[in-house]
Length: 221
Image 1 (tube, rainbow, N blue to C red):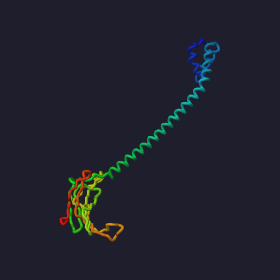
Image 2 (image 1 turned 180 degrees about the vertical axis):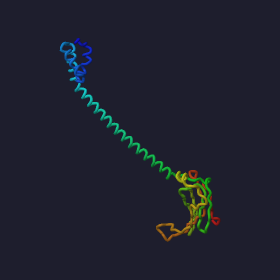
Image 3 (image 1 turned 60 degrees about the horizontal axis):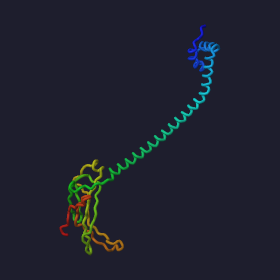
C-alpha cells in the first residue's frame, strides 16, 4: 500500500475523532499515524482541543438558552402589558364616546324650530316642530307679586344629543311641554301662606347667546 498523503489523513481526522468515518478509513488512519509522528501529534492536539472546548460549548449553549428564556419571558410580559394598556385605552375611548353621544347636549336654536302655544284655560300646551329633542329645560322668574298671586316669566329651551340627531326623525306638531298655573306655599316654614303661581310670559332662550324670543304673553297682564 502506498503511503497515504498527510493532507488526506488530516482531512479525515475530525471524522475519525467523532467516530463517524468508515471502518476502512479508520484502518487507513491507524496505519498512517503509527508511521507518521506529525499526523499523530495533530490527532492528539485535536483530541485535547475538543476535550477542552466541549464543556465550554455546553456552557455557552446553556447560557444562550437562559438568555433566550429571559428574552421570551420579557417579550411575553411586554405583550401582556401592551394588551392591558390597549384594553384600558379602548375602554376609555368607548366610555368617552358614549358619554359624548348620549350625554353631550346642544341647545336647539330658535331659528331651527317652530313653536306655538295652544291655550286651554290655565293650561298652556307648547307645540313643537323641529329636530328630535332630548330634553326640555326651563327656568322661572318672578316679575310681579301681589298678596295672593305670583306672576312668572318662563324661559324654556330644548336640547339635542348626537344620538337624537342621528337616530330619531324630526318632530312635527309635537307637544313637548305643558304649563299650568298652580297653587303652592311661598314659605315652607309657613305652609298656610299659599299663593297662586301664574305664568304670564313664555320665552324660548337660545343657548350661549341667551337671546330670548317671546312665544306667548298673557294679554290681560
